[in-house]
Every structure is written in structure tokens, then in C-alpha cells.
Length: 154
Image 1 (cartoon, one colour):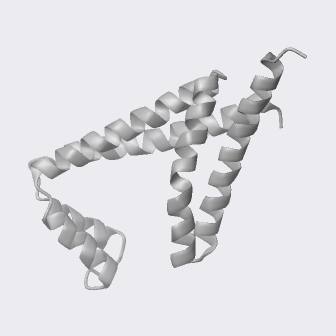
Image 2 (cartoon, rainbow, N blue to C red):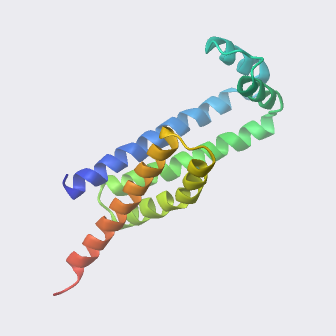
């Protein structure tokens, strides 16, 4: 795969993450002044989950404790996160060195957490996410080193 293609592939991945979180943030804004617990209960029913089982119960209970101030905080955090992902995607799409460095750093930040998750709960998903993130970080470092080598006089 050509280097520019790889950068654009990662840019699309980051833009998709940013878009999903942006939509989530807007969804949280839409829940302001609503009965969030009732919404969570309806969501659990719609997903055909047993509301008495552990995970759905925790979700419903947490939703019941969300007030408008907390919803605003969560929505603001989601919007900030999506802005970071979209800026990163822009930098990568346009082949900017700062985008590559930013992608390497932001990916590397998650590695200890993903490794901890793999050690606590080994599984295909945790292995896959760690491997994907390691590959992206390695690719960004490779791209930055290649860029630096091209600029360096012989």
C-alpha cells in the first residue's frame, strides 16, 4: 500500500470515530430535560435485553442518576473528542506531518489501557483492538521517519 493511501485509510477511520462520537454528543444534548432512565429502559427493551440482568440494570441505574448538568458535561466531552478526531483526520488526509505526529501520540496514549484490558479480559476483541492500534502507531512512526529521511540531505 502506498504511504498516502495508508494515511488516508487512517484518516477515514479517525473521521468515522469522530462522526460517531459527534452524533452521540448531539444525542446527549437531545436528552436534556428528558427522563433519561425511562429512555434507557426503552432502549434496553428495544434491544431485547433482560432489564433484570446485570449489565442492563447497571445501564438503567446509571441513566437514572444523570441530571442535565452531567448530560451537558458528557455532551461537551463528546464534542471535544470528536473535534480532536476530525482535526486529526484532516491532518492525515492532507498528509501533514503534524497530523502524523498527532495520530502517533494519540494512538500511543491508548496502548497501556488496551494492554491492561487484554491482561484483565483476554479475548479476540481486545487482541484485535490492541493489534490495530499498534499497527497504526507503528505506521505513523514509520511515516514520520520516512518524511524526516527525505528532508535530510545525503
